[in-house]
Length: 136
Image 1 (spheres, rainbow, N blue to C red):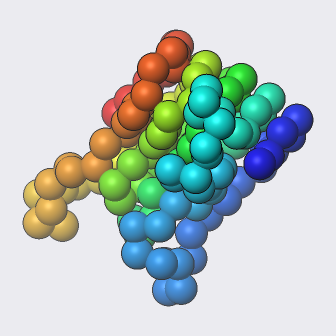
Image 2: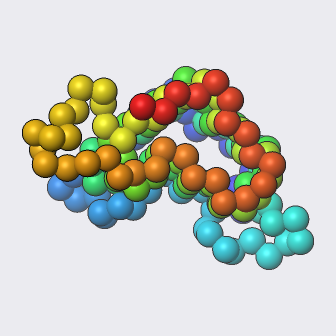
């Protein structure tokens, strides 16, 4: 269980040579581990002004079984493989004033013989909010 925590005003960048493929740079809680009736074992978390760069090997952030969590303002999630943000269960996770991009805007998919295939935001639960957020 995690409670009353703030992590932000900085950067996390995956090392493409050593980071586990498709892992998350930042994980809160363990998916499916919360056994309380409401399903929220992690609460009152704040992630302001956080830059996450998956370096084309990692996903951004996974939030599990959380309540009262704010991501942003000023979040920037870039170069993620599967997910920029994945929310599993819990209640009231809010993302506000953030930017998410599988790649930077000038990335040439045709030149690299790839196509976009990541999901910027996946919500597996109810009562979560995405406000004033740009997906590119």
